[in-house]
Amino acid sequence: MSSFRTQLRCGLWAGAKKGQGSFVWICRIIIPVSFLVTLVKWGGLLNQVDALLNPLMGLINLPGEAALPILTGALVSFYAAIAIITTLPFTLEQMTLIAVFLMVAHELVMEGIIQRKCGIGITKIVLVRITAAILAVLVVSQFFSDTTQSVVVPTALAVATPFVEVLKTWALDMVWLLIRILVIIMTVMMALESMKSLGWTEYLLRFFRPVMRVLGLPERTAVLWVPAALFGLVYGGAVIIEESKRGALTKEELERLHISIGINHSMVEDPALFLALGLNGFWLLVPKFVTAVIAVQVYGAVKYLRKEVAPRWIARGR
Image (cartoon, rainbow, N blue to C red):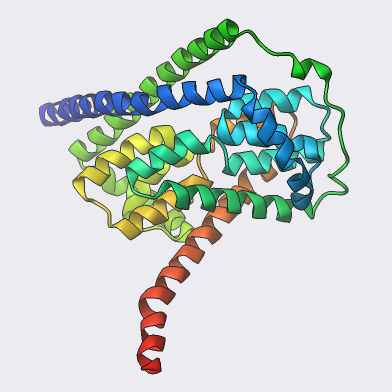
């Protein structure tokens, strides 16, 4: 019993130290990026880009007005996109398709920087997520009737908000977000380090082993996949960066993991927000999970062709 308490205490202390360092690291990314994007949105640049994207919405079976929540969610905030969705008179089917897109591709700047720090190029992961989101929407849209019907945008949305109010809202939202991040990161880090100290990590790996096989991921990535998949890239990234420092995973394993969690993460909070709007949970969870599986398998196939097949073809050509 004494040994158990000692190991647990050591694990909790080690987790608290790592959690504190990870929180500071996350803050250095989130605060400046979030503030910059807020300025861009307030300055009206987002609306100008939105107008350019309107014609492209028809290609993914959505009305032009869907560009506003999609672009806002992709660049600014997942929550801001939901606020816009509730303001515009979208049909349930249109909201579902927008949700499918945003569940895969949201907050690409901030999360892209986090993933780059953790082992994958920002351009690569952003392109993967956008491509996955588009394909997922195209497939899901086949199960609905006409989803391209235009909606009427309320004029109230065009009214500019004073910068002081924007700054105040951003500051309050940021404080609340950082508190949540601190609590979750500390909890996850302390739990993981305690499990390592007590020798329980193997049980977690064994439990998630079948899931890792389905996802096309190495079994030892389970302890990294779980925090990101359940809580999000911000929280999972803090855990991954610690493992990256230790050199626990190869570059290919890290990229497989990042592709999977880039497409399929935050399975608890994000769907809950859309469920509150009356959307079907099946479309919120299954498409992005299946898309993540396919994306990792395609990545593996491409790697195999480059490593094994291409050299043989080149050799035969000689």
